[in-house]
Length: 388
Image 1 (cartoon, helix red, strand yellow):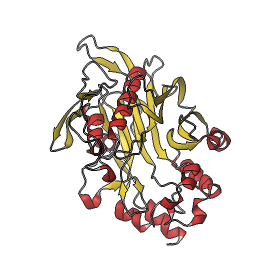
Image 2 (image 1 turned 60 degrees about the horizontal axis):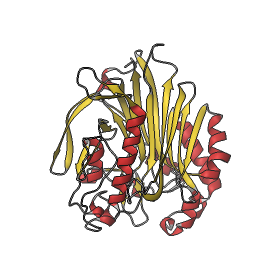
Image 3 (image 1 turned 90 degrees about the vertical axis):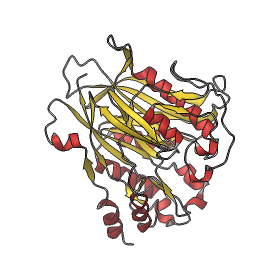
Image 4 (image 1 turned 45 degrees about the vertical axis):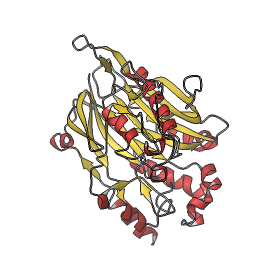
């Protein structure tokens, strides 16, 4: 496939889809600040080169860092987003390439490296013309004193941002951006559960605004939660995120993330003490953040969208952008979560950037290629932030 054909194959399908609110209020966002968020696993070069067997389907020329870095930067500049959540950022590339290059485009960045001697981590960049930073919270998942399951090198990163334009001068709230890359191992869903609960509890602390005088329920600043979570839609761990609770006692660890290579494997979960609010129990994980996915995963099988492509001709959606709403009613039916209603307030979803189906991605020759320089696709969403 020629470069022009590859460009067309990817970009004709990747267009913006407006939400109903976005359609009804098109070009009428004077009551808030419009901004765009990207979540992107950019594939650390160290990891690529130490796992070359995963990329045997790729042309060697498109796998060099010299080619990839310029192509990734071109893609990001073209997207012109306001907040970027990167996963798999190599530490020397952050300091020598990403930070200086993106500073020239008006971004400020923060970074957290994985522990245990790893060479990559997560980064968050934001446009300084829109936001100032109030707080940066690095989160390490190696905490064996809290749980024996928290013994891996994965990390998360949270920033609390203050909008500087587009809201009233007496705006009292902040915007919480959370970014993580959970453990890959499909059989160790028990570890992912512990990592996810720890990170959600840290987001809770960062976003907490106090108790409502009327309901006595906790109130939160708006939250956007991004990352490569190494789980798939409608899996038990996904259910925890979008429903707010998960009864995990008796589930197989390999079934927790829904990944194909873990199905039916691993130990059966019993009672586990996990980080979380008072409503959590040794058999139930929960959080109170009212999170929804930017993307809808209810398409027919042949039309399902994917975010990553493997050399064995399989693809999955393991990357996500979630955002918080004021309140919602979510029900679990036949393994899927349905939202009977969701009330957006200060943070409104305007649009999302379409993903590709497996067949569309396969037609490009898979990932990475000369158009897309990672083995993941970037996710993008547009939001409106209004006064609380």
